[in-house]
Image (cartoon, rainbow, N blue to C red; front, side, top):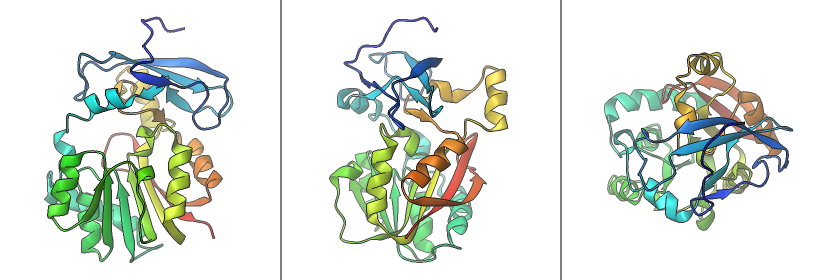
Length: 267
């Protein structure tokens, strides 16, 4: 059992069950220190407590931020999250990502949820897709709209669209979502039959992940904006539960230890 001061539920809504399978059988698994995180503010609790589900083996935090705490976290925008950041270099990275999608969809509306620096959307536009973005950082939305991209500053569940999407991307987003099942259900309703879902996130069953753990230098235990650590196996099962067929696995160049998965919406 890990020792430490217990966090107040005034800062996080504490999970009473596994956020993926709803099992109430889980154990504290690891502890992280947020104090060196770029988004950390000293008014926030300095530690993260991670749990592991006894039934589906998913790893998740003890809870997710309240709206008030999330507002504090999102006051800061890291340089690599700013629209236009290092755009020429990121264009090459985005192009490699888009080419993983092209065998399954090569035109249509592309929705990027949590578009960050905007490189993926702007490069998708260059490939002939019609880009639409959603992000929780208002400054980012204002900037990308100035570049001619349709974009919204809101949570996905608050939005309605007059179009269906050929591609929905969530690059390093699903691990930030309190309840991924709800997000995937919403996404499925927005997509065309046979549409492509493109996701990326850290892979906690990769050999690199285990090596970082062994050397006690795994940065993701201290990642205060994440609520989940997915394995490839658990992610695939979750996607299939929501009617998506994983068709391609790859290594992400965006962040350390990350995987990219292309999945097709089943008819």
